Length: 130
Image (cartoon, one colour):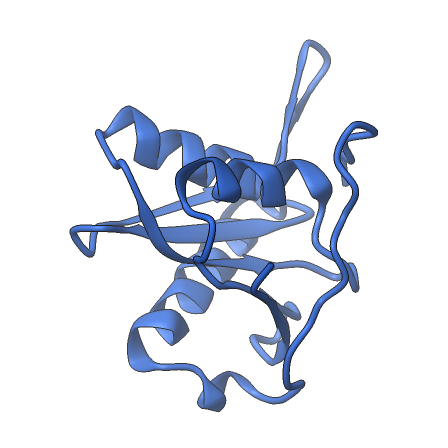
């Protein structure tokens, strides 16, 4: 998983539990992120919801000339579609922390959007709110 050396990865905060603890809309983000990851066997999948309720899902891209985290790509897709704010984000990964570059991308559009971190089976590992 690519990491940004300029941005520290925040620890996952908040209650640890299952995806059942998420709202229906946030659970949908986890489902979309799992689907994006599974579709191509990527390291990570991510999904974001913008201010209008539109969702964008993406998977990690690792090419010889381009590496983008799933969360960066989901945020970029939202921004390219005209999103000016994010309501929430979800990342499905085997890692126990959120990558710094993806975290920074979400914070570019929203200082307060929760970022849910989920395991590949969809179980909630935690939520970053900082």
